[in-house]
Image (cartoon, rainbow, N blue to C red; front, side, top):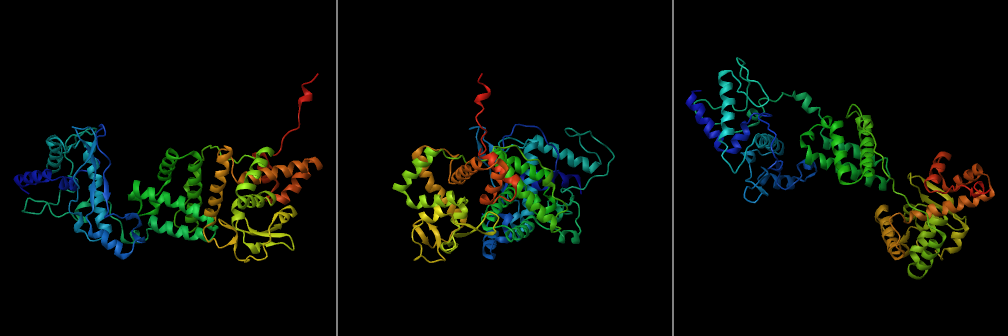
Length: 496
């Protein structure tokens, strides 16, 4: 190409930011400047491109009919505030598929960030920046790389192919942006290798499908929520990793966990880590990834949520209040207290789960196992007549005993927790008290009664039968956590 043609192309190139973005040298001219701009983002037709496979054909069609573009904000010198700048399309909407369009826009997004870091300012003359790029292009023509910040000028090097190289012969203008000239410098990926990749979306769908078959409904709901939060974060913050699950590495997960910690708490961060570790183990076991690197990420120390036990006076005051104001909640609490059930286990009960003749109660435990335990006599004495109720009805509903209430178990528990909060507010009780506090309170009472009659180890052995802890160690840890084991008074050691 003649030098005059080359310079004409440069002037045309610098006159249009879209063309400039197509042809900027990647990772060059990065200066340390004050951030007067926001990180460039991509608008994808009003849909989440990371969930493209879940969209209907009509939703995809509508999204592709809209303009997709890169957008960013820059600090207005007059107001000092960030101001949205003109959309940058650069011809992206000529592509008719999501993959090609997004690939093109990511190139523009990346290169716009390089320009902004290099000092591009839409409110000022960028001729100096243009000169630097001219020098770089001239260096390519002569075999000399212009000196750049942080790099020494080198000579007699073969010119490196760049995105500015493929000018149409004899025209002096730039060709249409296509995948070929945008990705000239990218490593070539063999077709077979690309076909064998598993996208993050595909891997997560498979992992959740497997987990759904082994977790109970309540646990899976929480688990799925944590996994999907990571998936959403990944799509928003590191979308380039969505194409291949193997691109999600240890540093990626650490950045996400730090993001969770910054916005919530150490406990939530640890819960997110635990869910992801379990999930990545499933992916490893199914040969989707080679190893579960999350196991090497440490847990943070955190203060666990604790439900305090009630004093006898507090318990009596609440019971008297419920006797006058909420008999249904009072009956719900009896099941937690006398049968040592967890609130969610009470929510799962159906009328037919109570065998009053045999004094037995059947219930779905925390581990999803169907269990059976004795229905305590004191509980039988407090029960109203249930003989006219349908055995397939739920025992507890918002409207009374017996009825249809087909919502998730966790929502049922939350309903009664909110109902009990009104009682807590009445007595000025804080967040350390809840329905679960009744289970702790009555296990503590039972243990202390047993300790008056039996030696410590025998008392614990009997208590283990009632609480159904799987091991003695688990029971002892539980008793320590709720302060059920209180040492005897040692005042005599201080008396003369």
